[in-house]
Length: 251
Image (cartoon, rainbow, N blue to C red; front, side):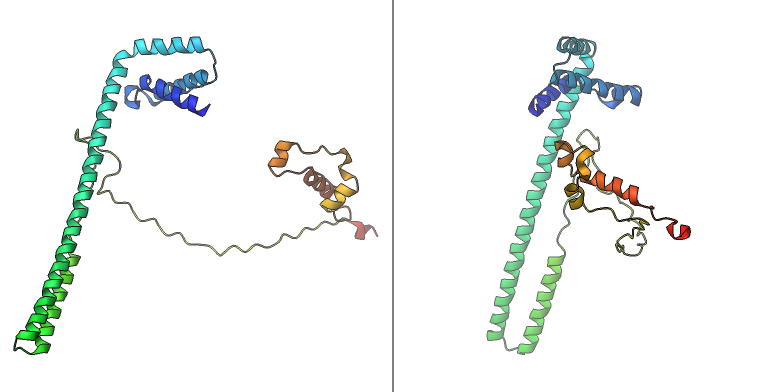
C-alpha cells in the first residue's frame, strides 16, 4: 500500500507542480494542495477512479503551459544543484590536498632543521648552548607557521542564477538567553485521606467476585495497558472514600 501511494504521488506531482507564487493568495494555494491529496487518496483507495482521472486530464489541458514551465524550472534547478554539490566536493578535495601538502612540507622543514642542528653541533666551533637556543627559536617559528593555516573557503550560498538557498553563510544567530532554573524536583508520594475503609487491592478484587458485573477489557485496551480491575478499584475507592466523615461528631 505504501509503495502504491509513493508511485501515485510521484506520478501526480509531475503534473501538479505549481508553486505558491503561481497563486494569487495563500488560501488558493492551500486549496490546490488539498486537491492534490484528495486525488492521491482516491487513486490509492480506488474511489471514483474514472472521475478522478477525468479531473486530472482536465487539469493538464487547462494548465499545460504552467506545467511545462515548472518542469523546465525544476530541471534547471536540479542541474544547478548537482553542479553546486560537485563544486563543493571539488573544493573540499582541494582543501584536503592543500592541508596534506602543508603538513608534508612542515615535516620536511623539521627534518632539515634537525639535520642542520646535528651538522652544526658536529662541525661548528660555536657554543653548543647557543646553537641549541637558535634551533629552539626556529622550531617555535615553525609551530607558529603551522597555526597560520589558510582558512577554508566559504561554502556557496546561491545558484549560478543568483537565487540564494538555505541560510546565509554570514548569518549570525543571537545567543539563547539563559533561563533561571528553579529548584530540583523531588518526588513526594501523595497522601490519600480516605475517611473511610481502604479499597481492596487488585488481587482481592479478582478473588472476591467484584468483577462479576464489570465489563472486561478487549484486546485493544489490554494492548494499551488498560485493565478492567483499574476501573473497578477506582469505583470502589470513590464509593468508600468519606464514609467515616462526621462519624466522630455523631457519636
